[in-house]
Length: 408
Image 1 (cartoon, helix red, strand yellow):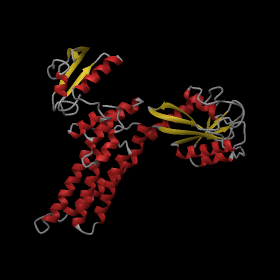
Image 2: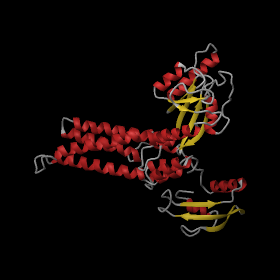
Image 3: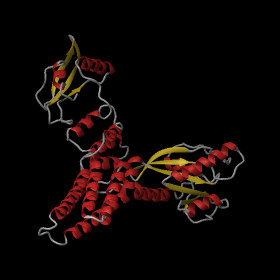
């Protein structure tokens, strides 16, 4: 429970314990005992939300939880909205918006790499880097405004030149962060790998071998796979979705032609493509074009024939080359979305704020008047402020906290 009447509601259930000390209490309402629970009391401001807070550690039976929840509502409380506790912590200045997003990511983390990234962000690592950039921008703005205000006074002649130089340096740092942003985003959201190739190249067998599951139907009959079949796995600590697709060929069959269209579309949206050839068949033009465009070539069925094309040689039937393929995939996945030591941008919202700040810093260099340069510095500072929520609108907050589970 969090809010101004949390203490009153708690008093309606049991005797309030000392602050921040766990106590065993019988909970009762309307003369009926509901449960024996561990109770904690956190008076403001030393609580998660910054408000008066109370915790009830109940026995987990559905009837117990329902009875206590009904009693809380009868005493004046209401169920929390998604993310409401963390939103209140943000509004009361306990955390910034990047830390709130880190908490949401921590709740949703599937892998250890995601957990590490979320822990760093929830702990304020990204906010600390933001503070350093903002402090530098504030200093630049102060120097620029001093140049404008005291232009006729004894101001060093190179003040404005140094402002321009430092603004260019900061712009370069922010651009480097944006270049790295895709890694943090892909680690958070996962990487999609499409398996494409001609019919009967062994694509379905390959996805089954890599995931260790029978996720796709395997048949010697060409055209068995007619839709995109996806499976989740973890590579290099990053969540990965493997997508098996229909064989690439021209077909008069309406359903198979639709499967080929979907396979092509999957390839366009994938972060990485495995172009699979069969060693015992002639190379097809469709798959060769994928390799020429940057896809990773995999030659399957090397137990039946010598590879006719360069690429990773594997045999799904015997297991030959599969370990080397997995090692290569892990390296590529780590490069696309691996954990970095420094806290990085993890959401498109972060990247948008940085891009806006970068554009403002570019305008500083082109400003024909000192006053316009100062205004561009102010705009860059406002854009960076959106990262931590210092200048965020209510609609942005609604979007961020709607991703949370109920309550937290």
